[in-house]
Image (cartoon, rainbow, N blue to C red; front, side, top):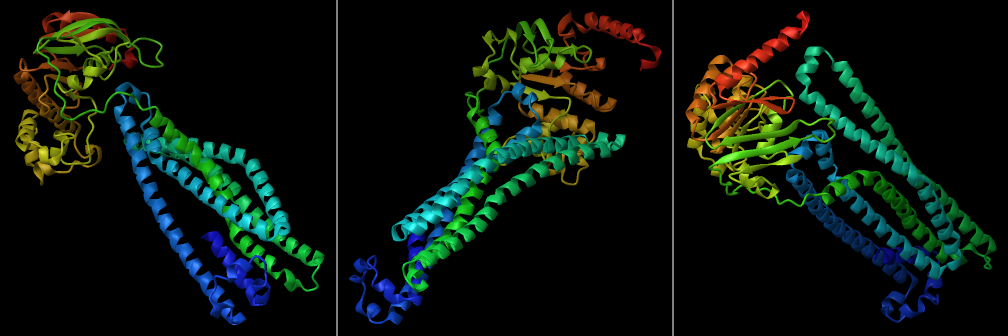
Length: 573
């Protein structure tokens, strides 16, 4: 339709100057028989008909173009949503160890880059459409005016190829550099938002601002080069196209056998109309291909992430818990983090009976949290094995096993929702058991705090629950863990941020739960674990001692005191 519109417009322009030349043209002879007699009755009627036909084709062309653009946009939106879903699904299927090895800002950046996949496809389709358009118009020009077409299309096409091939490596280099700096920028912002309290206290704002500004400046410089290099072909085509058009017209006039320039008005009009449509199309082709090179590094990162999707199935919310009636057996388990020089755990063997409360003590870095993560199934042993009631804990059983686990970490995560939403974590509002939420909050010593809130259980916590005290956040996290009705409750420094009164309340809750579920309590504060059935003392990834609190704690306290005495006086607490 675009080519037809261009042809009719060229005929219309030529007919204004010399309608007889068109009517008597051998190319038009086959069409005259299909035209009504009124159209051919006079030159005026013929010109008016061509004008109306050109106007209709232009309207129809733009209508079709609008419909196609709308269809492209709808399809692009669907592809965008599909890729976004695949990317998030990929991240959610990853195990905990993979997430620990990644920077959270990288994952957020990759998620925002999904639109670059669409842009690569979209700009590629635009380039393809323009290539078809230019080819069709070039074919029409070649048939009607071969000399003019050869003198125009070949030089412009060759110039376009040379410009694109010469600029492509530089565009690629700057695009990849820009993508790299964008990753760094998001990391800087993430670090600033997460560490804003420490940054303000230490008055280090200029340092972090300078780091951010450096990356932004480098990214902007690379992006500006990409934009500049992408625009150069457009300027070159406009200049070369106009010069070529004028040159071909002048040469045609000079070497024409006819005495009047009007003799070549038809081919010249066609050339002018083709140039009117093809030079911008040439520009769009090169710009589209340049844009593809710009978007490609980001799109490749998204595609690579999707293609690298793990085979394990997506987690299910209604999974049946794995049977746990007897014990958790840890046999010769060792674990080394990726990139670490030494093992976090070395040949650890431990048996935890169902219903038992076990405390893990040891200095920082002794392997307590690593052991807990292995028991939960967040990490996988480098060697050795863990069994639940005799069944080896493997990837196929992880979802069923975790359905038994309630976990409270040192820095609990909170959504930007209400207390109810954070206690009934990840459960649709219509499925929340509000009585159970209230009961779990009471067990976590939260009832007096919630009673003082204007909206009670529906009080929004805000981002990361930053307005709550450390103790309040920990108690909400404990209530969340209890809401799962766990068979195994893991408290990883869960009471370290509590005041004595709150800790006593939590310890009372823990003692009331003793025997009804298995508990693993990690603590530096020894009062937290002195009521446990057993204490396991870890140092440097190995078990130093395993026994009752009366057996282990005196030796552990003596070890701490001896280590303190060996410190220089100025470094003692």
